[in-house]
Image 1: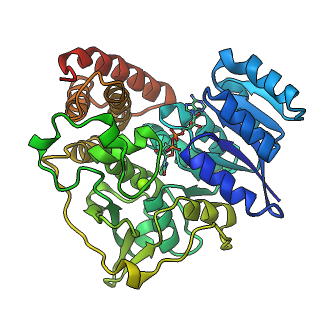
Image 2: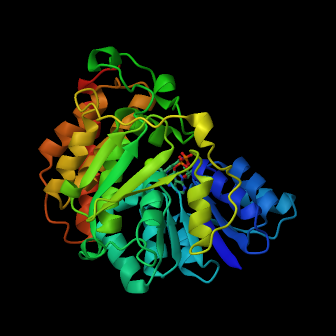
Image 3: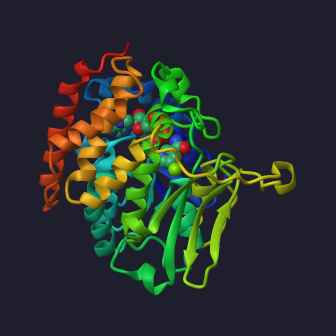
Amino acid sequence: MRRIAVLGATGSIGTSALDVIARHPERLRASVLAAGCNVEALLRLCAAHRPEHAVIDDASCFDALREGLRERGLATRAHCGTQALEALVASDACDTVVAAIVGAAGLPGTLAAARSGKRLLLANKESLVLAGELVMGAAHEAGAVVVPIDSEHNALFQCLPVGHGAWGHGDDWRRAGVTRIVLTASGGPFRGRPRESLHDVTPEQAIAHPRWSMGPKISVDSATLMNKGLEVIEAHHLFGVPAERIEVVVHPQSLVHSLVEFADGSLLAQLGLPDMRTALAVGFGWPERIASGVAGLDLVRHGRLDFEAPDLDAFPCLALAFDALRAGGTAPAVLNAANEVAVSAFLQRRIAFLAIPEVVRATLEAIPAEPAASLAVLLDADARARRHAESLLRAFPAS
Ligand code: NAD
Ligand code: MG
């Protein structure tokens, strides 16, 4: 029986994870559920899944969680805050962790899972962008199996030779004969539109993703192509492949989830319907295959697979992310923090869509890359980047 901590249980990935878990009562069990501040949603999940522990991040919600559990007659124990979450992740309350908190806020849970050698189903890509070497180094040392829960990286994980999985170390990729990684991108809701037409797009338009149903932050990241930029950095840390061997192609149907090229010219792809339950089932079952609730792909009905180059003029965030990866050190942490501030301001209608890359670019210019010597250095760069990006917002009014 796998005992699973779902961090970010009330979100899009968390909900999909619990759906897959509920399909396998004989082998999967949700033992810890954690969320940010939505007590009602967390209580509903506790009633449905009966975990041993529930964690709410926001301390002001703790009483409501404890009382709500008591009123429902549930034996689930209530906890609050990051330290409680880290302790539960590291404890024997779970052997598997779904890291699906959004943003840099997910790093403590991700790191705790890696350090304690748990099976880590890693959706929280921002923690890899912020501290990829630390997370993968800790996982390697503690023997944690990392299964990426991003459709692209999960596809790569499946296409790479069995037993390699997520390496993150040295040049294993070269020994496996890998010559290139191709990440596919849907292109988001504004694919094909020129830059001039994007001045006054709204948050509602930006989060209306044509293929995937996801949380608001990653949906905006998909519309700016920053999501693909974060994924390039994520792929580098997961598989050790350098920036110049990672390519991005736009594939509007979102059926080919990514590809690996080998020295003999072979290109292996993973295909499937765009539904994150497939990646989650891979993570829970690996190396076995288990049902996910996702139907097979009817190739004839879908008919075509198109590929095109990304438009870096309309979507400069992708190039900014490649630059940050090449600059190395603290640059990806700065990129990620500035992007989180800019996306949040856009969602609150404080800045325009096209200001998102401008805020990120100006923050990267203001805070030069330093060696990422420790977690403290990375967290300091993250904090400075947030302050700087915040100070820039007034220069980019919404309209
Ligand atoms: P979401 O906004 O739907 O859910 C976020 C979850 O995190 C919620 O449960 C929220 O309560 C919780 N949370 C937020 N701040 C928290 C905090 N400080 N402490 C504890 N919990 C907190 O987001 P999502 O779309 O599910 O994405 C989650 C992560 O997975 C992101 O890093 C995203 O990039 C990644 N991801 C998502 C998808 C997808 O299809 N949704 C695909 C690939 C990767
Ligand atoms: Mg993805």
